[in-house]
Each structure stands twice: as C-alpha cells, then as structure tokens.
Picture 1: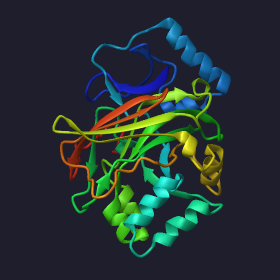
Picture 2 (picture 1 turned 90 degrees about the vertical axis):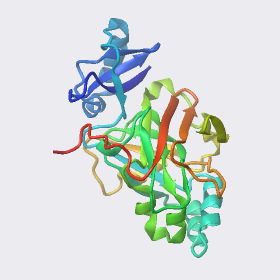
Picture 3 (picture 1 turned 180 degrees about the horizontal axis):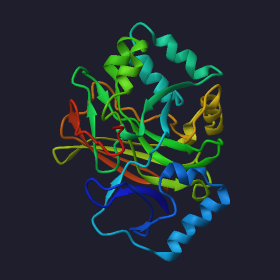
Picture 4 (picture 1 turned 90 degrees about the horizontal axis):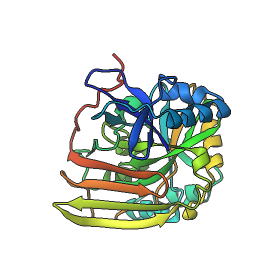
Length: 295
C-alpha cells in the first residue's frame, strides 16, 4: 500500500488516493496529504485500510504527482554516510575539513530542499543547472513526519546536486541543491507500519543513457550513521511545521567524478519496499510543474 497524489485531468484539483495491487483507489475523506497526516494514527490507518477494502478505483489514465502538498516542506540531510563524506572531501579543494567535521559532529547537516509545488514526481523531469559542470542524482530514503513529530511514512527522494558548484565553496550549497527540477519524490508514501526496519533497506540507482546503462550501484540504509529520529528532532528544534515535513536522509551512492548527468538520461531509484522512482533529465529549466503552485 502507498499513499499517492494524482490528477484526473489537466486543470483539475489534485486528489489523494491509495495505490494497491497496481490500482489507484480513491480516498475521498482526505482532501490533501496534509489533512491525512493531521489525523491520529488509528484514524489514519483505518481510513487507508478502508479505502483498500472499498476498492473505489480512480478513473483510468490518471497522472501520479509528487507525494507532497500544502505547507509541507522538503528538507535534506548531508554527509550521513561515510561515502558521502569522502565524495564531498574529494570535490572540495579548499574546504574538505568542513565535511570531515560535520560527519563526526553531534549536530547533523540539515538544509532546505524544496517547497511542494516545485517537487517532481514519478515519471517527471529533473534538471541539472546550465551553469554547472558536474551534476549527479543522489538516491535517498526520505522520512515523512507530521506536525506532531510522528513518522507517518517513507518515500524515495532524488536530491539532485551540482558537485561543481558546492565543491567550489560550501556557502554555495543552496545554489547547488535548491532550484526548479532539483528534487524528486515518489512514487508514493509507504505507511510507517509497513516498513518494520528502515535501517535495513536495499537502495539501487541506475542511470540509462541512449539505451544503455551509464552508471549503476547498490547500497543499504544499514550504512546510515545517523538515526532517523535524531535527524527529525534536530530539524524540529526552534521551528514549526504546521503540515509536517519530508526529510531526505542522505546518500551513499555517488557516481564517481567525472561522471555527470546528461540531457536525455533516465534515472531510476529503487528502495526495497518503497518501489521505484523514475525520472528523465534535462539540462537547464525543466517543464514548469505548476500543480499546486501559489497564484
């Protein structure tokens, strides 16, 4: 079972549903993901399980959207795996010690990644900046947390990054990480009760180019140095998230330099139990998503 957002027709209001056994089922009682996460744990689970039992299928041909809406913010953690630390040290000529220190520090590196309306969903298009020369996908386990601090589910995040911009100066991190087409989530959100051990999930990344595999790798969340509750607790310090947040927890699959994403590539991220997130790549600005954008 996965919680999804979908669109029945262009210009329609996005809906919330349940993806189960290859079918999308309507969830009329929840007008948004933000409203669903605001329910108590028992009510939320009963609502989702009732939708599976009722099997009220959504119309055929719906478009699945990124599983984030409302005032839910997307954040990310950095240098939470040893290989991520090593990659950052490699790309940073003058500030390598910054990444060494944060890997061992008590306080984790946390940074803002995206507002909901800029997030790309499964089947969408991610982008690499036209002013960057070294760009990679970063496949990550993402935890979904509601306003009360409860972990409600898990999803896949591609934290697309410019290694050349961040490597030039760590203060350029927002430009390396936060831009249109720089974040993908999906395909849906797996409820927390269906993921008994988030610290034992296989992760696979495959990048296809011109019909062949240009890069691939596998890893596991067993290598994650930080605890998920630790990362979430630090993000919640001195801040308020009225519709909760999605926190991507870092990567340890980093294509080695000089590998760089290219226009027309296809990126496939699979996490055990969470499904597969597939996106295409464009250099420069991607198609404007527009769904849920402020007017």
